[in-house]
Image 1 (cartoon, rainbow, N blue to C red):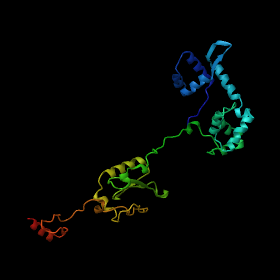
Image 2: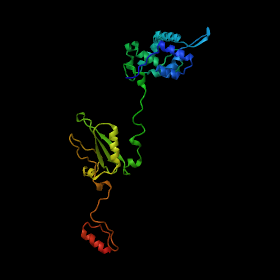
Image 3: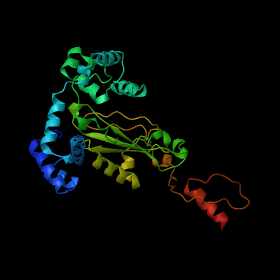
Image 4: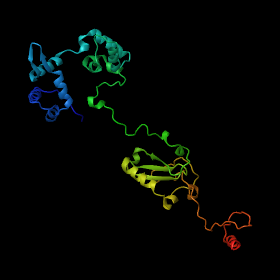
Length: 306
C-alpha cells in the first residue's frame, strides 16, 4: 500500500512554531514529525505572516497558518469561480488538448487569467468534471486519478541501448567462434512453470538445452553462464542430433524433449576428427596422394620414408 498524504494539523503547526523560534533545523523538524522536508519548507513559505501595520510581528505563527490554510480550502476552485476561463479550458480538453498543453499555451500567451496543469487535473476529477466525463478526453482515458507517488517513471530493467542490433560485426556475420545466443522456450500453463533455455553457438550451431524448474532469472542465468563457459562433454554431444546444422528449434512434448535440429556432431563443429591411423607426409619423389586409411598402406609409406 502506498503512502497516504495527510495535511498538517494545528498541533504540528504549534510544534513547528516553537522549533522555529528555537532555531531548530528543518531536517530535524521533518525527522521528528515524520514528514518530508519539502512539506516543512512549503509550510513555512506559504504561511509566513507579515503585516505592514505590525512590522515587528513577522514570522511563522501556528494559529495564523491554520487560518490561512482553512481559508484556502474554503475557497471555490479557480475554474468554478471564473466561468469564462472554465469554458475555455473545457473546450480545449474536448478538442484533444492535454492539461500540460493548455497551461503551457496560457503561459506563452501571457494570459491575464490562467491556471496550471494541476488545477485542470483537479477540476477534471472533481464532481463537476466527472459529471461532464472530461476524463474520457484525456490520452490515458483513466476515470480515477492515480496517486501522486505512482506517477514517477520507473527505471527500465533492460537498458534501451543494449540491443541485438548493436552487436559486433564479427558476431553478426558469424565469423568468430565462441558467441552464443540464449533463448527461452515457454510452455502452456497446464504444463507448469518449467521451461527450457537454449544456448546456440552462432558459427557451429552447437545447441545446449537446459531445463529450468521455474521462471526465475537468477538460477537460470547462473546455470547458463556455467554451461556456456565450460567445454561441452561427450555425454552432451551424444544427446544431440546428428542432423545438419540449422537454426530452427525442435518440438518439445510433455514428457521428454525431442532432438533439436540445430546440433551437429563433433566433426561438424570445426574440430579435427580423430583418425585411427596416423597422418604422414608423402616422401620425396612420391605423388601427393591422400593418406591411406588402412594399416597396410601406412606401413609401406613408413618403409619408404625410412
